[in-house]
Image (cartoon, rainbow, N blue to C red; front, side, top):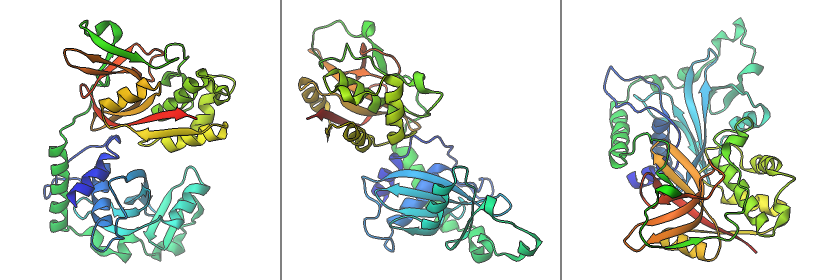
Length: 364
């Protein structure tokens, strides 16, 4: 079960959170994101959970804070894709799950859909309210709250807490990645080795007018995923699929962002395919697992979307537009990094950041 739990937690490690070990009498009872994921995945993979509700292909969609009527955080609602949800007690000394299931909580999801600035009050799985719509008058003081229904949630469960902390420490020990330095190990052309190499740059990479994240900071956030999909559209438009762009880069990004949304985004291929379909094209894609796959894609003049981890808390989408393979050893992706409108940038495989996933794209 630990392997499954780790696979799920890794999928959401780009979220920034603090980490504190459990020690009786000294630890804050507040949950951080890693705590929520450990608790949720532990239950969703338990013997009483729906079989295979969580798999190695699962990733976190969102975490929603749940309150009582006086504004105290009592629990967290975590949803997973392709399926699964859990409501986790906000207490690292009793990190139990109040409810969980294969789909999601319809009552919570309805509130989220109706109101963008929702404030959800959670008393139990069937007493869930949008806070601004509830009139808590003096007559309502007798209403039961979460801990009235489940007083045991306020108690310390030492066995569960220590087991929870063991998972947490094993995870942090197994993946000794600290906060990244922010540059992901990217290398400018002038700083590349001068020894002999085999090069390849995909067609039109140098003539594409690429989008960069800074251009859209006022309308989007954590938008490297949306920028990557925009750049796939710009690149394939340059290759002759002209209807992939809408007026200019800004309008194209806005249309893409309406589909991809703000990040962090662990998966962008389905959103990219949807945008291309909306513009009248079929976007095909396939996973790339190693440098040979990067070479094969580039040799076919196909770009790759690549997700890198600069550290446990830092993730970034880029596009591979070619490679350099040095005779003396050393494999490099040539990249569009979504920060600078140039492809004179490189990433040496496995150096400076972790290559997490890659996807080759092409248009019929």
